[in-house]
Amino acid sequence: MFADHFSNVAAKYAAYRPRYPEALLELLVRESPAHALAWDAGCGNGQLSVALAARFEHVIATDPARAQLDAAEARPNVEYRCEPAEQSSLAAGRADLCVAAQAAHWFDWPRYTSEVARVARPGALAALVGYGGLTVTGDAGGLVAHYYTVTTAGYWPKGREHVDNFYRDLVWPWPEVAAPRMQIVAQWTREELLGYLATWSATQRLTAAQGDAPYRELCDAVATRWPTDERREVTWPLAIRLARVPSR
Image (cartoon, rainbow, N blue to C red; front, side):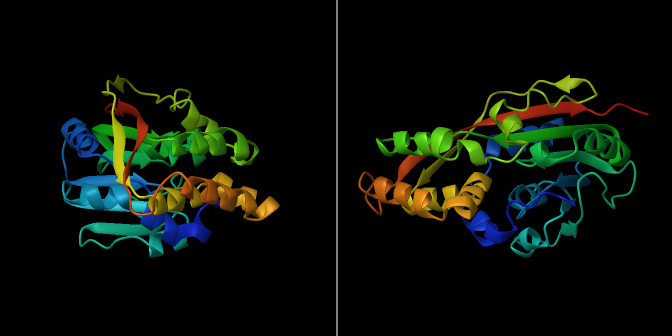
C-alpha cells in the first residue's frame, strides 16, 4: 500500500503545480543515449510526461494513484499505467531515460533503483528531479516562508526531508553525471500561488488535523499584500541527480 498524499487534490495538482523549464528537458534529452522510450515514474498528472512526449517516441508514465492519472493530459505517445515505481510492467532493458520528477522521496529507494536497473537499456540515463522551498517576491514572500517553515512544519510526511536536502542522500548505485544548477521561474497571480500551497501534502494533513483555518488565515494575509490580478515572480531551485546505468 502506497502513501497517497494527493488523490484528494488531483484536479488542483494538475492546475497549480509549476512547469519544468525547457533547459531541464534539453538536459534530459542530451544525456539520454537514444530517444525511443522514456519512463516517468511517479508521474502524477503527467506534467513532465507530456513535455517528454515532444522529444521521445514513446513515454510510459506510471503512478499508483488513479485519481492523478485521471487528471493527466492525454498525448498519443504517452501511455499512462496505474502502478508503483518499485514494480512496473515495463519490459526489461528498453528505457533510454528513467526519470522521477518530484516523486522519488516517496519511493522505496532500494527497490526503485533495482527496478531502474531492470528496465534501463545499457547506457540509459537515470534522473531524479525535485523542487523544494519557493521564493516569492514582495512582502507576501515572508508570509509564505513562515507557512512553510513554521505553520506546516510538523505536518510534512516522512520523505519530505529528501526534498529539503536536495536529494543528497538518495544516491544512485551507478556513476553520476554532472548536472548544472537550474530553477523553475513562474510569473504567478495570488490565486495561482495559493492554489499551489493547497496541494501541499502538509496543507492536507494540517487541514485534516485542525480544519482549514490556518490555510485560510494565510490566504487572507496574502490578500492584503498582493492585488488580485498582479503577477509576481515565484522561483524554486531544482534538485537534479543524474547517473548512467552501465552495461550488465
